[in-house]
Image (cartoon, rainbow, N blue to C red; front, top):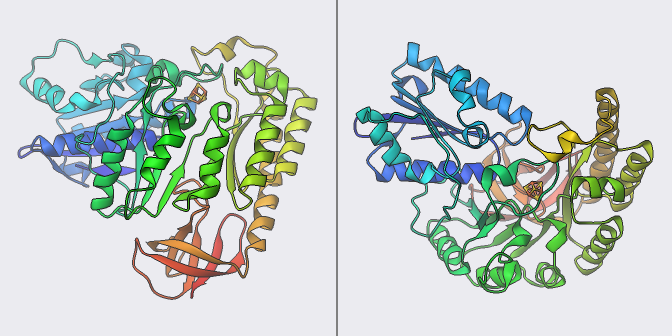
Length: 451
Ligand code: SF4
């Protein structure tokens, strides 16, 4: 996603890569720079400073970050760019090793430095830096006074309720990059949500590396359930959505809130990764087959209208035919509304790198496509069943498909990751809520008309 930011004398162009959590950091970088006198540009050729806020969670993201940096470094030759700055996970993960790889970069700022970006740029421009790499351990937590320029449309925002992660999934480098879990106070989050509501935001998507761990690291109220009870009282917020919920700390109280509070979307993003006990154990997931199945049964019975999203991984070291068959049957039985699937890759520095036997690449591919095909059938069937339903839709504006004028999302569709509702009849402005009658279910999207 491209964001845009220029100082009175320096124009800044910013590219944000990776997940919604990184996007919030990019929004803070923009806010901090504009507050410090910089202005924004969408024109990379006109920018004197180019910033790339990177993701390096997996090898693929690292490759994308490096190719984006190399491509933008061309602007030092052909454009107005004088400084190229790389922030976020890539420098935090690879530190000084990047100096040789990317000599065209003037400054590397890790995940513990983005809030000091204005000071870093000032020192850089004064030519006072002896070092190019700053990767202090991340300790900063957002507060309601943190300057932030939303990169999302004005009616929706991500709210980061915590930083870091205290789990130790064996395949994951994030705790190394982001440090242990640190929750913000409920007062700080509520004040931020009130500010966002006053700016016209109607949909809040709560995010963290693990949202259900919220409050477990400190004495900040009564965890995620307590936070939600506070947030639902904020006027003008119509939808609150929970993303990134590790199943280990998903409580009955939280499920009751999902069932009972209208403002909390009947939607849960529950990354499960696998279902077979031996694989879950080797992944260090702190969950078992039985716990996951019981949890899902409880959620489905207490909140029948819930839309569940999960993320799974195939080809983890030691995943046998039997483990995969169990995963396949689990996907078929529990029929998730939304499902994302990854092929396992060794990530340097993780415990899973040392695990054997490795699953051959060809087998991973087969397993990946098998689950994708299975899920597309499930999704299509579920979407077709929605034909005739009248659904509240948040209008996003012009449709990405030339066949339809407008598009929007229902409470069961998170921004960016899930499908959308194409609107074939009726008029409405972006950010408004309308009733839509579903006329057709596609594989991942729906079609409907405003009633
Ligand atoms: S819960 Fe596991 S996969 Fe998610 S960020 Fe933490 S360590 Fe990584």
